[in-house]
Image (tube, rainbow, N blue to C red; front, side, top):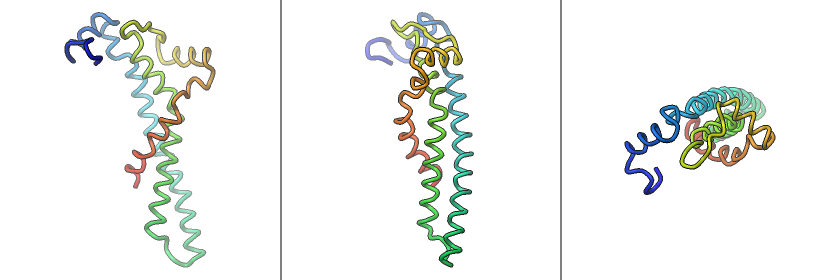
Length: 155
């Protein structure tokens, strides 16, 4: 809530609902963000499972070559790498949905003009105006931001 713009949370909700686009304005972009979040979670866990199968095969190969089981440190390093890679992949693939969702949430606020009618309209307009590159503005930073969370989740 911007300083001085609203008298509190209740006032902000009331004014957004009444003055800035109706009740629909309160939820604009929420569905798109939910789709992106769900898709990201599914992709991340699927990719992690796939990457861990590759890591397990590598650890088995190392065990066969050395005759010693892999150390806990080696297993944790493989989990860390698989989790980080899965998080980066999922974040990059779902970034366009998150981008559109965030843009839809702030459109129409204050003096901002509503630009996107729905998710598909937003994706289309960004592609027309900024090319494919426009869909991935900020994606590298989001991918870096996802790594610590993935490490905590999978380690």
